[in-house]
Amino acid sequence: MGTFIGHVYPGLFLVSYGLYQAIVVSKAVIVNESLLDPSWSPKNKGRWARLWGISYRGLLKMVTGSTLIAYEISCIKGGLRLMNKEVPPRFMHPKEWQHLTMFILLTLNGCVDVVSKNLLPQRCVLLEKGTLVLAFYVLLMLLMSHVQGSAGIELQIHSLLILVVFLLMLVLTIELWAPNTFHLSLIENFLFLMMGSWLVQAGFILYRPVTGYPWQDDDISDIMFITTFFCWHVMINALCLLGIYGVSSIWHRWYRPSLKLTRFKENPYCMNTEGPVYKLLPEVEESEKGDQALLFSESSLSDRA
Image (cartoon, rainbow, N blue to C red; front, side, top):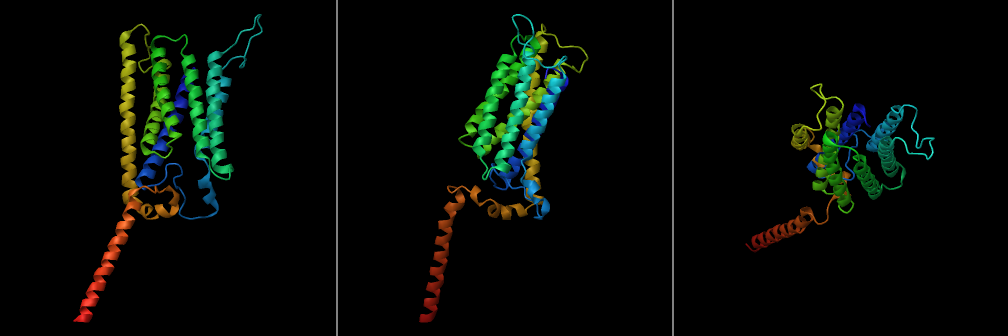
């Protein structure tokens, strides 16, 4: 991961994951579906209908993690070894082993998603969320150790990345007790976008600066602009989420209005029993009773006349 590609590829994966989750959450909120199991079923239930039930999110994690593992091992000249042959022996490639641990966690998290959604008799959302939270706890510890020996520009970049990972870890931990909450899912998507876009930015700053000249660790202006760029990423990603929700709202309300009529049949378990729909039912029954009483009184008056 200590290369340009090692920063850009994981960043692009996280951005893609965040955009996909933003679309899913926006659609679920607009048509009042569950955030845990949104319906993406095709119109025609044919031979390929089962493909819609595959955990593509888990497969993407597995493929991305495996690819990054292979890339990390191939970048080390002489092969990845744990210890040298000196006396006393010393550990080798400490940062590369940390990168490898991160990618292994990503792959294992993808395996858990696939097993939970496609192999278990019943999907276990708590298992998926718990594995993801555990992965971020380990990631935070690795990043805290990863900045040892860093200074200047690199330290500032990784400190801001650690801040995003810490906030994301807190949100994911809270989601263990409130997994079907729109506000938490929105914050989670935003932090995934921030983490991904900042990794891409870090690759350009550390390895391929736009000006062609390396950033200076002893220049306070360069260090200050690192934070400025981070704030720009915050604004851009927030606007991106707002745009996704706006486009999704227009699409589902004007081009796919049938989803509003079928959402309760497809996901009856997603309805909250404490919601306003159930509070309105007694009022409807009372109004129907009132109408019936009115009709009965009118008919009795006509009979008397």
